[in-house]
Image 1 (cartoon, helix red, strand yellow):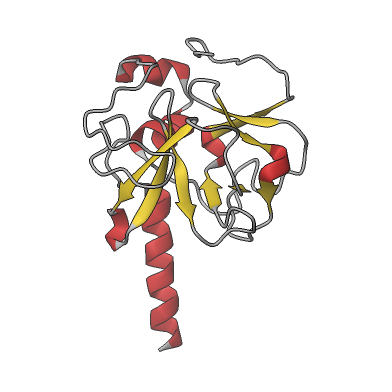
Image 2 (cartoon, one colour):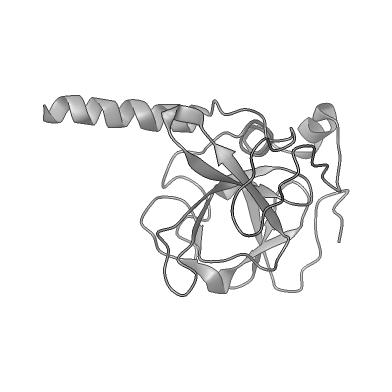
Length: 183
């Protein structure tokens, strides 16, 4: 019985790593969470064609940010980082999270207890992989960042579980590095 459980867990992890969710550059169908919008035809301020995104992003970033992929746990460059600064969207440069809000959740991905400021992200229901989760998107460019869960530390109780490929760590006052970033 234990080996069946382990095989099931490995299969679920493989599915998560391979992606499989709908591309996130489409308008959110069902949006949830306090910082979300209810619009089903939402437009993001920064727009690029998929060909342009492929030129801007690395293949891994494109898979995560534009195809809702997921990197393997404990493999991303920021899962265990303790450096000060801010985390920007790897697609557009928008400041999304502060290093001060990063915490060790032991889940294998960078985890944050809150966002840098209101309206920096939007969320929507994600029913991929046979489960219900809340997907986190950059409010500026619509890129998939990860998911948010209600098992984080006080006072927010939130755990923003974010792919390292979706973010870039920068000094607090560092300018956005991505072309087309809207500030």
